[in-house]
Length: 89
Image (tube, rainbow, N blue to C red):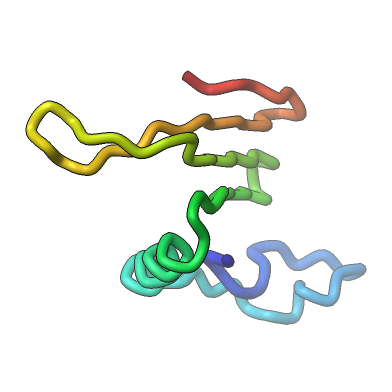
């Protein structure tokens, strides 16, 4: 799943530098996430910010009902920030 097309940088060695950076709209990304959830039982969703060299992964680990009966999902989150891998809580 992608959240944008092209690249915000204009490096002369990269083929993506000639494609204007075009972030996808929130509604499009939401539709893609809903599709993934329907097709894959526990999809891992990842974000990558090339400007900051940061990456995040969210992996569902289980489903349960909250105190009011609402559907909830437990998950793990991993992040790479400035080259350091971290387990987010």
